[in-house]
Image 1 (cartoon, rainbow, N blue to C red):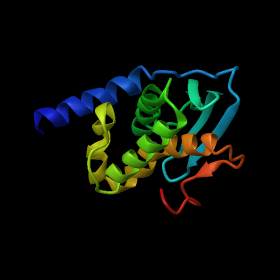
Image 2 (image 1 turned 90 degrees about the vertical axis):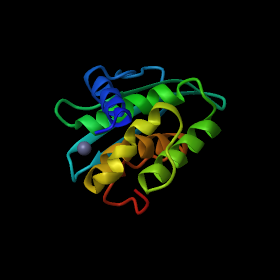
Image 3 (image 1 turned 180 degrees about the vertical axis):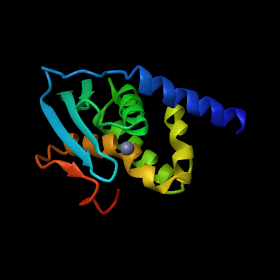
Image 4 (image 1 turned 45 degrees about the vertical axis):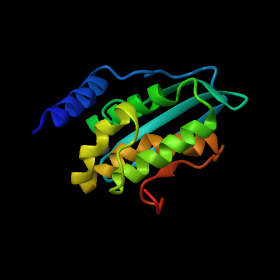
Length: 152
Ligand code: ZN
């Protein structure tokens, strides 16, 4: 593996071991749940929207229900969008999804997941938190599941 690949792997391992924003957010005014039955990943996402800005964000994964990729992706996603306008978060979501579909790398640390492209079964793991974010920002009530979402 090349140096960049190793660096990316370190980022994913770090965020899996020490997930950022791994908390239930009592101040949340948007929530979403995501399920990826293929892998067993489950996420609860909490967003505190302040006008058009994501003031705070947190996530939880019930014990044993998030694989390394899904947890690291949720951690990096929350880090990336915290404090950002909703518009920017949606742009990052599109860039992340396009990267995993074979497009250009997403900006910054999100590029760490570019290697997931080589493992199609893990793409849903990486995308789960982003789809949950999208649902929360759209204020959709129903849980997100990788089986129903066509564009996962
Ligand atoms: Zn997974």
